[in-house]
Image (cartoon, rainbow, N blue to C red):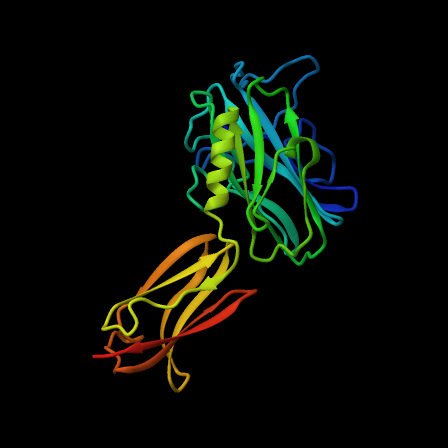
Length: 307
């Protein structure tokens, strides 16, 4: 009914370890109760005894511990894989993200590609062989390079192929389990990766499909139709996830309508404007401007509303 015992910190670094089997004096620990309101009592085991509840391991079971390391911080608390008694969807094997201090680096996962990124483990059923695991590197107050690597717990099925797609770089790491990936940028808004595991054909086809869905650059397209009355659409592309704003201005530079101001997933997007201002009132005929901004990009397009 509980997750593994996670310990905080190692040597001079801050971060969460992989699940531990021993406790050291003065260290910090976290345990996740799978049932809300459940009490937790820690009892020492006598030498030679074993825990009563053991996960069911089959020949199709596999677990990979994802490791994120920087010079000052680390996060080793994340696991993906398949287990004999696990569910394909959310269950007790899926541990919520562990708490962090003001400065940190961490790996966050979504479950079943729901884009929430609120979990530190995603263990699924062995009823399926192929799958995609989404994970995001996050950080605060840390701008040094970090390395994402892995540790295989036990062994992998003989026919299992594992590759990772680095979303911002639009690149494939087919030797991730051997070499890992180094990221040389500040983890301000999150850095997305996808781990694809399964048979060779599935992995090859899925990787190419993922790459085709990642734009090569930021862009804000000309609205269509233009001139318009009163509805028009605006296409835009995001090669990486992050905070995005698209705002409509009038000829005087005054804000008329905020279409988007939120964190968005990478990809190809479309937004519509119905010719209404912030208060829901129709705007008059004339020239307007759509402006898109991200942390790295800014572009403006001229639009004409004719009634």
